[in-house]
Image 1 (cartoon, one colour):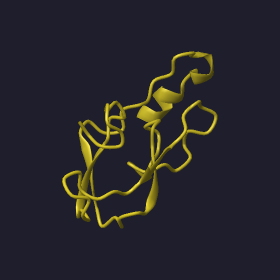
Image 2 (cartoon, rainbow, N blue to C red):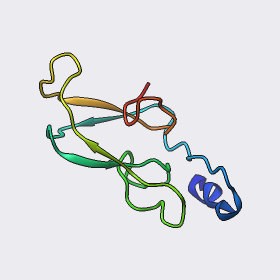
Image 3 (cartoon, one colour):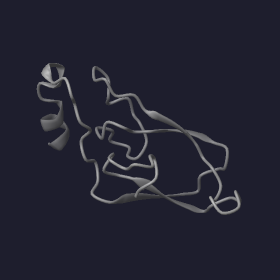
Image 4 (cartoon, rainbow, N blue to C red):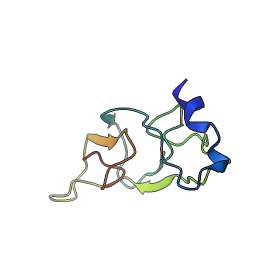
Length: 95
């Protein structure tokens, strides 16, 4: 399993990198504007893109994300494209 390979000897690695959970975006629907979500940063969660505490014993911590409206006018959105690879420069959004 990919997560097992990512966990191997992580205690001995100073510059641990996130596992790629998905090569592409996670399309998420039905979120409530203003709701707080915990976005997985380690890539080990089995409930991607959300954190399920699989990062325990690693230096990773989830990203606390407050569901926002659109960038254009702040109105409610129906769909979000969230990063699945964990390497986005605009986390949690996919770029």
